[in-house]
Length: 342
Image 1 (cartoon, helix red, strand yellow):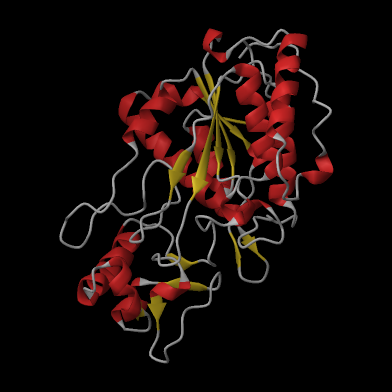
Image 2: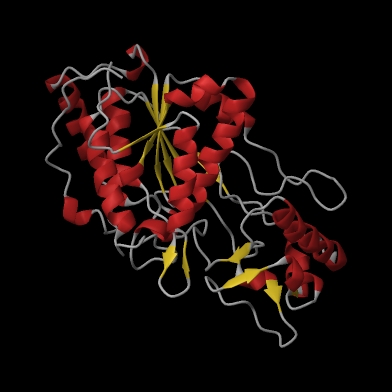
């Protein structure tokens, strides 16, 4: 990417509000974005010589604000807030070069395989969220079993089929060397405040859309009750115990991403949804042309790993994943160092 002069940060951006929830004043920002485009001769995105996509993974309140369900604090304790501050500044400074912004949105309902209500033990208790990993041995020994009451809502009342699926599911995770099934707090709940994008990030995306006449490419993931969906490109498990398909990889979105001249990736969490998405993208790249890896840029200062003090710390796993991505040819960079060219 060739160097160019970066734009200033618009006056409306308030770094102190990145950690808060508030309503974006759309009409006001739209008028400002139009003036901004005129002032700095920002052209419509359709005219870009190099088509650049900024993929923002799950920059939602549920992951990014300290008082919400799954705040990604990293080891610093303020990871996602600081990440989003830098991300917003990156968007504004490179407004005239980013062609498309593609925000992914983790989207859940109550009864899903990684939520507490799905499971029950002999005492009738649900697993403690963020502190329970359900292993293959746990299910085989009956330490955790599917809550019979959820079968009515997600399996047409067929409890035995649901229990069979649960055993198959943890078996698949084990066989493929993936993380054990983690029971998470209820999060990214469809219709809830936690599901929404962080206000400051939403504002930056909207400002970009108007200034560049470029529709944001929203991608929803995570609604299948029978599988986790860390990666936006494919769920964790695609087939049920009988070999029947329960989900598919997101082929159309993969093709869209690889159609860009450059793909820049940021978001949460580095150890889970970000790493899984990049890993799936790399798998597709290696299957097509490994040289495509060179057009992927990972903003290492706009993503943080899951760290629950005293419980789990995925920092080392996240760093190892990024080292592997770099070794495959992807560019691991800081947002302050990556200057986009036209």
